[in-house]
Length: 109
Image (cartoon, rainbow, N blue to C red; front, side):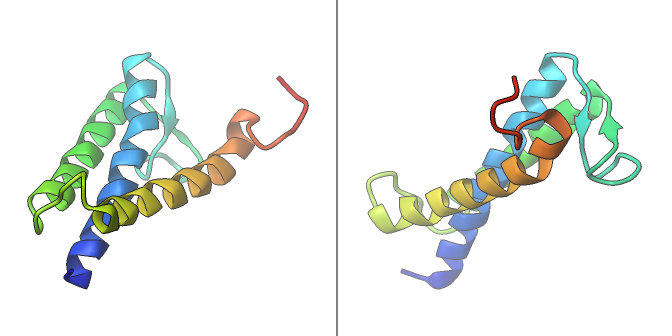
């Protein structure tokens, strides 16, 4: 296995996971944090910006997963690399953005 392919699959998982909250928030018509907000990552961007940003993340994730190397869902090492990217960006996002949306406070609705 080429380690560059593993890195590509890792970042594919990160981009695919990052696209989820942006696309969902945008489709629901809700603002959400993006790198384009002021201040970046803290302010809210419009629903339209979130749909575009989410779509961009999915496109980059697709290219990194399926156009680099030969990604195979039955190859444990490839899935593990992608899954690690999913897990790490998921935990990072939960901890970073949970403070804005009440996700880091146990016992509060």
